[in-house]
Length: 513
Image 1: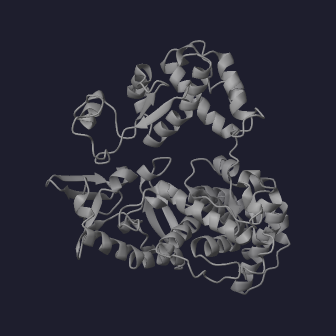
Image 2 (image 1 turned 60 degrees about the vertical axis):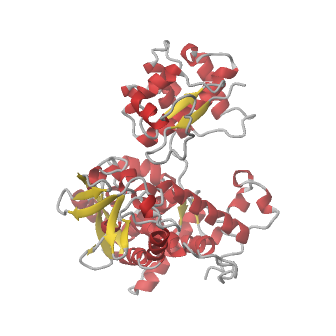
Image 3 (image 1 turned 45 degrees about the vertical axis):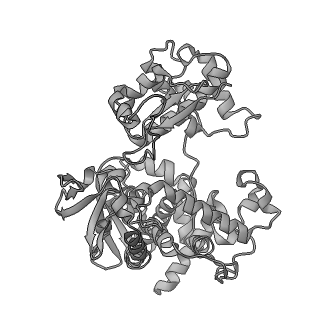
């Protein structure tokens, strides 16, 4: 036995029922863990004998590890655990690991044909960063791996997880996966639609705004956009810095239709979930509740509250992470109700990572409808390309990718057609206002336009978009212009790898109309 394991420090109130005699001789385990200095979400490494490793415990308690964000702690710990197992299988302590050990491990993880779960270069670079941090803290020299060395980084580290769908393919995926439609567009009789409005409105918000899963999934109900832009088709809101990857607050934009769908959810499914939770007394049993007493506006909005013990508190919204936001409640007509926008069927805040399950189930429904039983026998990664192409496959981040693709195409269309700019005019316009790449970069909240090009729009960066768009017919009729954009997307899907479009889905093009 060489398997290492991880345990995680629970959030307050999430320890469950502990035995009265204590755990491993400790009477008050949560208090004992807090005295050690462990924080909620911190990992505890268990060696193959199920004992806590003291060296790795000190590493977790160190300022080097504690300076990481909670999600980074989880990623670094889960990346380190397989390495510890690998070294244990060789009878090697991590403090005695050599460059040859790490070379062999990297070969197994990335290149060995015998390994059915090989990882990408991007994933290896993340793992190498975790290993480097551990080995530097443990003063293991020579460093077995150092992510700052070019030879320890992967050459293919550009993200390959780009997943784009054209607008009409998103419609097909939503109809089948989230609305329970058949290939012919009819809802199946046994379809249960208890969370259909919630799920479809969340997807539309992602597609309309380009927000990440955690950004959109952590919104409070009073953070929905309320101000329209001058022409009335888009609205803008403020995204708290604590929810973003850059930790900087920014303005985001969403279409009026998408916001309207979210508002429809708040007065229907969400309101019913709140009523059921109040009737069942679920909110009264929560270990943490902060009743909001005031929300200020301005450049630095602040929320003020009082907790169950009468303690008054307050904090800028930009500094509240998604876990702390789940504790906020508003006084409703029938008692307290969550300020958190997206709720489970039980009326409780839905953690952002739970959206992965919603998307996974929708993908499975699409496969069930669009693939034969024989084609579904193999897991997606082992299917032939033509079989994979028959069914849309979506993750929450696909909405962000697709938003970026749509805005790039639309902005190029506007620059090229609507304004009739010459090449010289376009250069002057770009100097004044920025080109489409720069505008998409702003909408996505990237710090560098090269990040936008490299990670989100790489598959079409090499294309001559001007020549492609020049072939699209334009008219003065708005509906026909939308149809022309569909033609542009279809052409890109045919000529570029990685873009899912209805025309490529065998036998469903006619059914989607």
